[in-house]
Image (tube, rainbow, N blue to C red; front, side, top):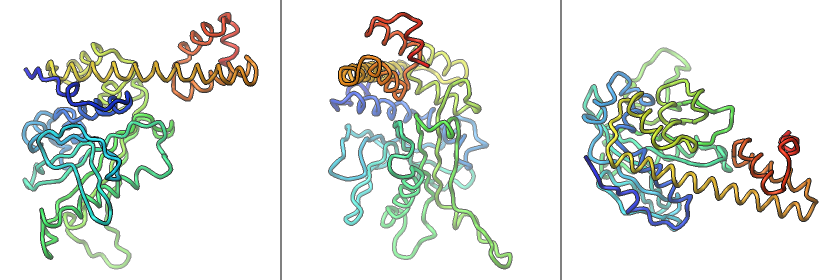
Length: 328
């Protein structure tokens, strides 16, 4: 049993959100979790067993790193062994991928270059479509192969790439959905057919989470439970073991517990921030408008209604009936 709690040792960023994001990436980089994602999202592995993927096809140790797209904004934890996760270009800047690893294709044995990106954000459209960023990452992964996977004009040696995004707070219209974007052949005239392997070189996959009870697929349920801010660590471990047959090592249990603790800390700070914002607006616009503003702010933070009721009753000394009125 691996007792190394490396996440806790290697996360040194001061901000709680950064620590939480890093914990998520470390947890998702576990081979058995990656195997579930690969089986459900990558066509080359749909016929394989999860254990088979984890033990046979994932090469080496997944590389984990946290960074922004611009080189000067990078904040990195110490790197673990595996495929390099940094892609540098003099003209395009540096992209450091959240999780990056190599995997062998089950049929041909050919190496496929894969990248997993985890984005924990409330806005699915942060000023640009995430799918465009996913396609950009795919393009960078292909262009970065020059000089390593192929040289000169040997384009036949280019390896296929995937960019898989796990979005924890998508808009309702995309909740509990998995969407793949890829290159397809379309004959505009005639019936010529090219070998699929010669153009099917990249795919971006968007996994959007939602409510656990509405998961719909095994992968969505697994990720919804694993990354839930409400589910207790013990319950998460039980579901992983009983429903998904994932053996809980001491290392994996500690990672689950760490992420849950960080998540609760972020939520509590968000609640307090919402309360303070409501109080400030209350002083400026009157108590009633302040309470309404606080309710609105907490709802934007996706705080449960029963928690909001308790908070405004406590802060403004309201009866339950009055608090419920503000909720409406």
